[in-house]
Length: 143
Image 1 (spheres, one colour):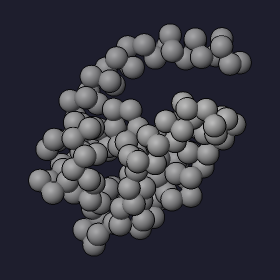
Image 2 (cartoon, one colour; image 1 turned 90 degrees about the vertical axis):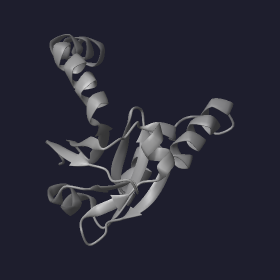
Image 3 (spheres, rainbow, N blue to C red; image 1 turned 135 degrees about the horizontal axis):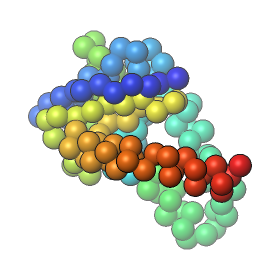
Image 4 (cartoon, rainbow, N blue to C red; image 1 turned 180 degrees about the vertical axis):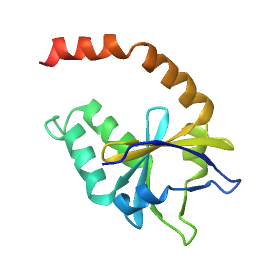
């Protein structure tokens, strides 16, 4: 299980250090995929499970399913962890996630996420302020 928050820097070549605890779980080949406002890091097998869970029971002939499938796979790349523990993101991924020099890498159960520090701080403040309401609403809806 991945958890915790780590302050990191992304360099001009779009390389970012993956915390050692996360590398142990994610392995030497990591799938980096744009998911919402961040870049999610998956083990290869976990990424396939993630995609199948999203697309699994959707009708393949539906235009929206094909669009979602294209979005998932077109915005994902295989990254090899280098000897310094870094991965190389694409320029497009870095731009779409608004990654600048200061980043945050967080653990989210079976994946890690790379956020722009500013975007993360805004998101985290909002989510923290609404934590009790969110937990209560989800419990009412699904339990």
